[in-house]
Image 1: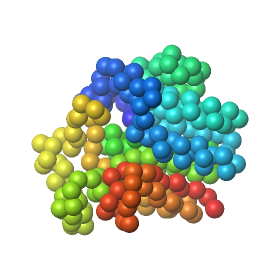
Image 2: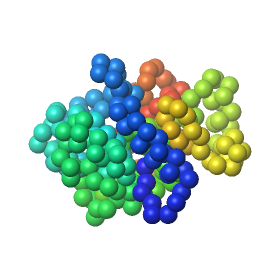
Image 3: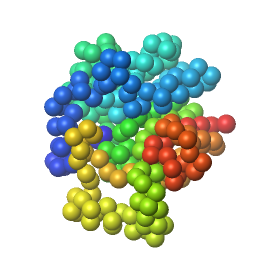
Length: 241
């Protein structure tokens, strides 16, 4: 998510959602989380790479950072998270150092270019209106690569609905359709995810393709021949060769 000094109804809604029950954002003990497989993929990936530092954008409760710390204690870890409630939860629940997760804006990361070997983000981009700018910022501060797990709206829904989405996208009408469906707000609100936008990681791949030599797309949810048309969620690993 983003940090902003001006009042923004969308940001206020999502902040209130996070503040209402931070503990509920983490899965209960023994219950798998929606990003557990992507996190496991990241942990395995880190084991085969020379990664000395990692930044997790939208670090939330700190659960992901705690898993990385346990598996790879020699990697220098930082996180940015605009919600003070979630930053405190990362200390109280997961035992992270108070300065490990800092206040920060995904649209203007407070770090110089190429500050971290790897930059990660799990399930935050569909909460950000200007997601392309957030991905650009991640690519900017990354030295060796970016690891993202997020939604693919074009692969969600039944066969007919997915076909309609792709046609509207091809005609350039998908943003206008979303605008009308949301009554001009541009976003939806759900009990289980708070405020979110109709988002696809596919739309931000050109940013990563321009910055990195290798961009790998993974379907973490099940079988699909065509990830764009069939996978509701995606993982992308962008890296220097």
